[in-house]
Image (tube, rainbow, N blue to C red; front, side, top):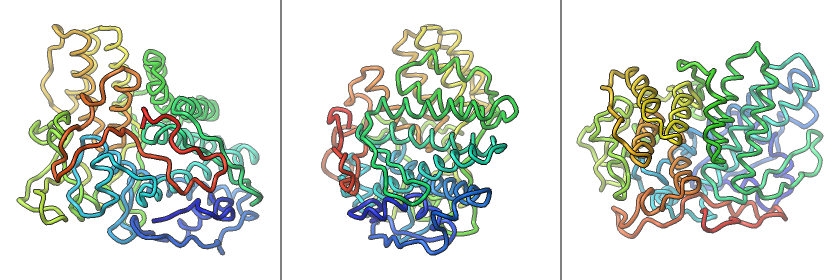
Length: 450
């Protein structure tokens, strides 16, 4: 798989540009084969300036974010994204394919040489680096606050996703705009990544001002998500109060090229490698038998790509052009509900959840007799159904362990793996071996949080 950052300072120096070039040329890469990263001939450091350079950086950042999050149809066996791989680490899907790098996620035994995760890691860093440079360039040009805010938001969400899914120890290097030597980043703890994300969202809010409500709401939800990771639950709820429930910001996909297709749909419906789970590892939620409209699925009496496992297809993403929600007003209400759980305000928790459930025609639930533990269990279950297959679940389960002090063996899938062996007690993805080119690289900083 791609070692985008490996043993070559020039590749690191081209971090942003290589990502942009891939977008321009609609390049493809394999999730399990070596990627040949070549020097770009179309985009040069000198060309990434002015209005034209800004648009190039913006397009590259959004494109790399989409592939990092959702995956794509490009590459041998297509390309998984962080949404699907983190769903395997959690309880949303089981793996019904044969690729060993993907099975590692399903058993939570991901090696730092895992090519699939190295590719996702590289795409997310390219999205972040291009977004940071685009935000700087928009500020230099002036009068482009909408783009500036959007790119600051992309940077913020990149930090959030690294904090939620990777172990502490991710470095964040910077590729100078003039193509000079890479500025190697220091490894950050999980808390530092969430804090850095919150700072980016503050900048995005400031850039958006009162005129750009779309970017402001995106930033509010992003900052609240970062604060949840920091355990600042009531502060998170306060930030999203003004976000309307019908707000949504999507990661867009299209059929224009294989790289732009929705990789979640490709990996499930087309490739039949991701099957919607049911009570995974004993602790997993019953995503199928709940027959919940928020997690639609079908049983076509088929076997998965491994020719062994019964396959159940997700229907949330019905086509290769289906968008993936990055942030929504529903998520804002869920954040408020979590603060109400913390306050043991049963009526508030009930009102928020039942108002949301009514949106899907679901019956109201009576939460009046629940204690705080029961309220929390109910809330996180509802949150899992609302945010199914959007890249939230692994972060939520880790947060239950890290912030709420739950035992991982009672939260994550545990015990015997259905294809043989055991689920490993690892809760996050490792920093890839390809980061060893960074002299500051230390691997995972805290083995208890991995």
